[in-house]
Length: 224
Image (cartoon, rainbow, N blue to C red):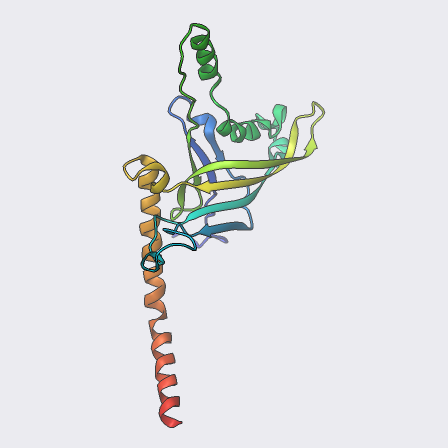
């Protein structure tokens, strides 16, 4: 017989870069889940002020969504237990994994330079790995890291950062950006369907309150 635990199992948020050549290097699991997340959602409509009246409610696709979140990274617990890599490098590896999501691969940069020197006219710019923002089972979103600010707050004797705060700015990528048949586009469609189900559950849950409100208003009108 098992006893109920004192606290529920905590799911941790994460940012993962889908990189088939180096999957481990692009996995950043949040040490502490942020207390706050800001989401900005902007409608993607057909036209502006000069649009035809019949087009006023038409949508070109899902809304554009941006996410701002602050992540704290601290090596104190690992340092206390002398765990590698914190014991010799602090939180530098975690910060490096996050930063590398914005870097082209060095092998690609070197290869492109060689091709240019050999006279190849067109070199295709490198692609960043598909980046996923994971916030529980109901929100697995393809995103673009637009920018982030790193504040390193403490250092070890070798000047490796041992505590840092990272302010992340993410742009959610939908099937409008990636294509519905792509892996990222399909993930976003799953997210949208999940959101539709949540909205339906909310509507069903509010039906009794809405019915009571209408009944109350009708009685007031009849009594008046």
